[in-house]
Image (cartoon, rainbow, N blue to C red):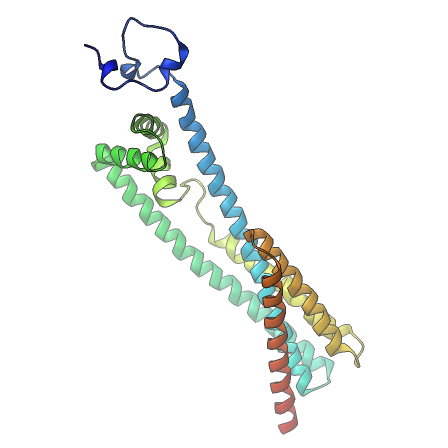
Length: 272
């Protein structure tokens, strides 16, 4: 009696050839159609992780620009409510832009550095487990792929091949959603956030400075509303959501911030 009758292999039987009752399950060098699916699965997960990383970076840039627009628009509108002097508006706007960009950059650096430290710790733990209990880790990886819908036999073949190729990468991507070769970079995040904030902040600052004095408030509000509508639309498209609600939320939030700060600035200016 052979092993074929107890647990028939899935891949080799599609060839239609007979090896005299000999099972292919014991031939590690044999590449079957099921085996060929393993690297494809691995590559697809790596691609998905990279794609998700790019989407998160783009979303962070859109949100950074949005923060710059709202923050500096509120600031310059508040100053404009207190005084008509361009010098005062320029001073407040530039100070707010620099402070906001540095704050965003430092905040992103600290946040992403903490995330990177956590990723390093999780990867080190995974390395230790692979050294100390490789059989248990292989069984865990097999169970994960079986839970994704593969048959137990195919799940084991996939787990064995991925472990042989790069055990740490296989476990990190499936268990932790981490690519060991593409960890988050705090410097990139800090620079991107600061630049995005600066670009967003320049719009209301330049508008209120160079628009005619009698129309500077209206021009600033109009430019900010258009910019916030664009960032709301972009964030919705990146997230695959309907654009109408994010656009309305963005525009209303920015308008509310400008209205409140302008009113407070006008009250303070009148009191002084």
